[in-house]
Length: 106
Image (tube, rainbow, N blue to C red; front, side, top):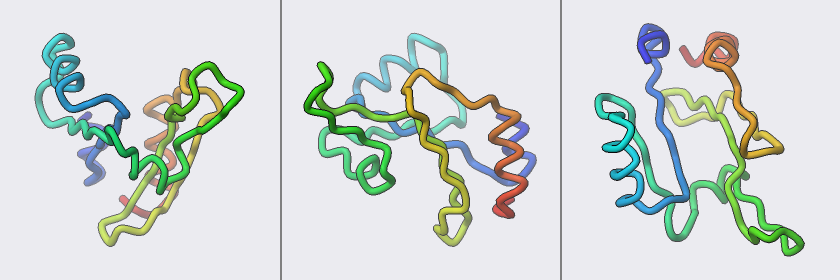
């Protein structure tokens, strides 16, 4: 993700999947390199802290992660938050880059 690195940003992915599943995904998708994938399994503390975990007793999937984007500066201050209503919704890289530039974190 050189366009993010050019701005001094580091992209980190967080998943509710266990670490062995993330390692298998990385291997299967040849996703080595600099991208960091963290597991928030089983306690899901990070997703809960950032408001990206949905708990819905009416849903067939009782608890699930929402697709979310956060920009956190080098001091740990959250500069940008976008939590999508659907976990299938994605922001484009250009939208995230614009948010990064606008946030002042880059």
